[in-house]
Length: 362
Image (tube, rainbow, N blue to C red; front, top):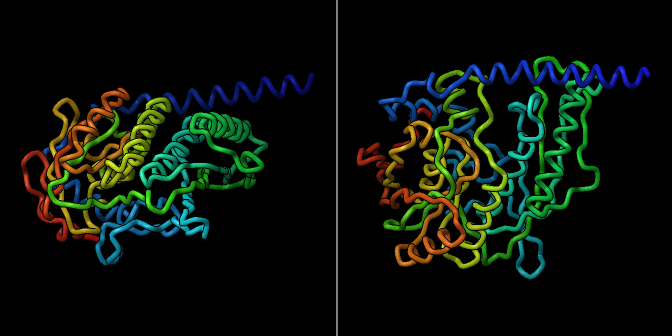
């Protein structure tokens, strides 16, 4: 009887926690944020954001610093790539951490984290193979801690099944803290994949005149973005838009483009949104980009929103028709962004200078 009472109490506690956080989420709407008129001010404000300007040597091997001096002379993004010594194959390893909304929707948060890591590997031409997870700052004696652990486990198992990943030995390792203070519960996942050396697709833009496509669905979404949290100082917002089935479709499409060697470069839209993803791709070879935003999408969400399931692909003009045919046949949404320039950055026919000048404030 005491077990049943305890179980019922935990369920009540979990429902109370969920209700409280969802009520806080529901208070936020993108309509609270006026659509900006000065994009340049946002760009240079975000460039001093440590999450966008600093090098993280341990996580997110595609999220490079926006300073050319920090990138070095190499045109390829090799961090996280290791030679196996077996017939020229390479191993890729990526580590990602997440704490946003882990306390109210741990399953979705975990699925987003694994999808993000898999998307990055797919862009490189790699096949994600193994995933492991680690929960930090969890109090098992608290109903909230039990709720987070259970949801994270479900998210890990579901995402692993969807992406065809093996889960390393114990499904989730725990680091127990009964009094973690202000440190929020955090989940860290590590993913390993393999790639043939000749099939590596780097993130850096390659040649002036190449066309740029956004594969995936546009949406008016700025939830938990660096733009919303750093520029507008709003930390209570919903998780970014995410649909795991859309994610799988987009990743399959890019894997096929890489297999057919149609993609000159591929970058998952990540921290800072589409603009900073393009900037990270442009800087290594000192190229630029001329893009047009979607008329039906707010310009701030289009450029700085961090909705999941989107990948930027560069393609040669002579391969554009084949790429469009493949995406159309697979029924994958895509958007023609623009083209690679010699170094100038243009958005909707307005110039924002040259890529070698885009390091102010860093």
